[in-house]
Length: 78
Image 1 (tube, one colour):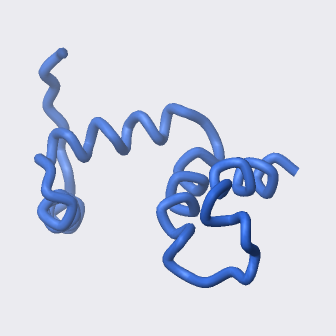
Image 2 (spheres, helix red, strand yellow):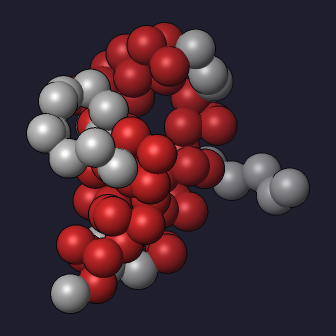
């Protein structure tokens, strides 16, 4: 890994600390994850958030709980 230094606004730093604490990870790990998502291309972060939400609500579709990744890929690709 390469060490780097960035400057954040006070609000960005507070938000990163809160989110890292909520997830139980370091700020550095969270920043790496967010950079990976940003560099992966359009829609990647949105798809990851959608996948995280799947299963939290009843959709009425019987296969969603078993095949949610495929179902989401179909929705986002078409």
